[in-house]
Length: 298
Length: 221
Ligand SMILES: Nc1ncnc2c1ncn2[C@@H]1O[C@H](COP(=O)(O)OP(=O)(O)OP(=O)(O)O)[C@@H](O)[C@H]1O
Ligand SMILES: [Mg+2]
Picture (cartoon, helix red, strand yellow):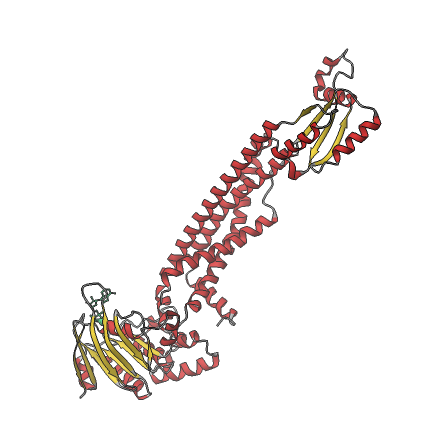
């Protein structure tokens, strides 16, 4: 029987046509459930992007009280850059520091009038490789840098970083819990809707079993049907998510979110879009499987 | 051949629907199962097609012990049986033809073979001109004939019928009766649970009587 997929597909499609209302109900529940999950995923994805942006700010600044001679400065920079945590080292001269400061003051730049350009110290801005932008990575690097005499004055927002990491951890846990809950709720609702469709066809299931259909033969069209309905629900959910995204995130909420420093709010990346459709199919399949256990007993 | 040895079925702890039944039905026999309501006729049928398992005792169908049958083998037991019910149990959204074709479809038979066989059986029960109808467009007697055709289409070694005429008029009863005779003549062992004195009178055959789950009579005229 397995070598007759066309036959199975025909049976599945026929079943759906025979009870269009229940079919629509299954599709709709999957669509609603996945729209919520999709919307939630947009928020998670954007928080992830935002935290990645923020983590780019993680760096160690070494103030140089005495600016070394050019050749030894070069050696120092090369030495620091050789550390495996370090992505790059930028030398900021006194002059550059002054210019940056002036720029930041902009209109109030006249406050600087009469001050020498060298009142700010020169510094080395040491950025970390992405995988080491953690509290632990920073402290390892700082410990290594402290070995060098020239680098006595190090600044590195350790406390901020620890708090930031705790925040990200909390987000991850909350995301996993909420996402898991949503998924479970979706499965529960979808399984119950499919149970209704099976209930409407319990005579058919009984008759199949009575004429000697194997459980697999009975179940396959229903599983296929569940997967198809789920996939359609997933596609609709993608549309629904995009609609909500447009309605709330892109326009409504963007003002709030942009204030936190996010440059723009992204829609779900392609992989996630695919995952929603595939997730719908899986949800429909699993929902059918769960409900069928109650009905197909031989 | 059907053999029962000390078969007891208790749905609940303290009362048994069937109690220590031992009997033997030969291949090709025609047997009535009779008895008042609640005697255990349906229970006996359900045990034979594996919808229930006995609480005690052994059941053999064609030499195979079905009490030990794993449930994955159950479909294959049923493929050798035809089962007919009082309420027909037809697929109401499928045509007469599709209903009769269904067991063959389930068994994965070839399409041309199915068509040929179904037409042949529908002709046997006299419904070959109504094969595109839906069951609910037919009379009760006709619906039961469709159900019997569905049972016979697989050339069953055993035909089980649980009050097949319980919902039908007396004159239709005798028409249906004729079909069971034909089925028996084609080689099926027939077990027919019924209250109908009329049936047994017009076509006397071995009669097994149950009462409150016990075997109280086994008469061959
Ligand atoms: N699924 C069940 N659960 C519990 N008790 C049951 C079940 N099916 C039948 N019984 C009991 O078993 C006994 C025998 O029932 P059964 O249906 O076999 O009788 P029957 O001879 O077919 O009766 P009828 O002529 O009314 O169809 C009855 O007392 C009935 O109440
Ligand atoms: Mg009964």
